[in-house]
Image (cartoon, rainbow, N blue to C red; front, side, top):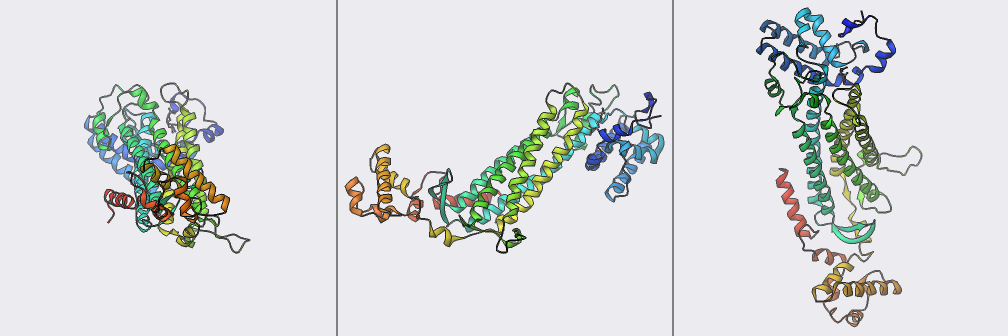
Length: 461
Ligand code: ARG
């Protein structure tokens, strides 16, 4: 009388408030393609092992394909009485086929079904994110090629520190993105085992072929333990952790570019098409896209937190709490995909304001460390060399001089005889950046080598 799939042991209809409270169709309808694909693989297996006839299999597959079309074309009626996507598709199948439709749920529970559908959904979404990361990396490498000769200040503590090549800064993000890519690929590998056949929690007494289903659905193997399979959400946690780390990287990058494009730094010009204005201040051009990249990363971190708290303290095996896993995962992927879709065009459209960078490039004694290293190379102990250059900087500040090269050359020799007539030639930011030589440094030739290496690796050119 409850009118539900589980109606047999119930005497009363479900309270409307419970239906409203427990439904998941409002969000898990997004699993419909995976659910249908899973059901087709399942019924083909049922036919192979003799649990449905070949005729039933054929009718079920055709009906499932029709249902898929109806949903895709928006002709399929959804209602919360049927709770979730799995029940919707099953009841539509029964409405079309009668008893044959009543066989689809043989040797299956929604517990292993939902885990399978969700894994397939996450797998597809991971593939889209992988492509998005690659596009962004390629945009950064191409832009880096144009910026390979641009010297700019590098920072620690947001204080001017040493000169760097602008491309070197972009390549730093390419490296971070590559680790993000690696984490997401790892998650995909570990995720790719098929839960179907775990049934409710303990498996089934029916003679199913789990391996055949796993293979048909593109899984590398089957899960080894039915209790684990029905309760595991590590795959969602791991994928969302990968997304969270990625969003944190992009949030840091966005923050940096907000600063660089602002009037105080003035290093970067963003394309008009990717900026917005102010409704009151006519002169404004705001980096809202970058700010929202920074802001939206909060949602992804929030999703990770939700998932972690959700699984904390759940006993084996399926618990209804697990239904709450979908929205954070969907939102994390939607958010990251939307970020990636605007990040690449921003990189493509950004231009360095080279004049502005040059104007102040000699500020902040960016060559001081190089001068110290010059002394060390000539035999001075590091601590003494540090002290010597520190005193030269202090001398500049006392005399109101902007650059080390503004000091009287005689003063250099006076403070340390190793600082001879050659010394002034080493000074200045343009010289300092050429002095780098360690692997992984910002030396212009090494940066160019890295750009070529990345272009090769990501099949640019
Ligand atoms: N709507 C449920 C979910 O998304 C399906 C699984 C229900 N299983 C159960 N034993 N009630 O998790």
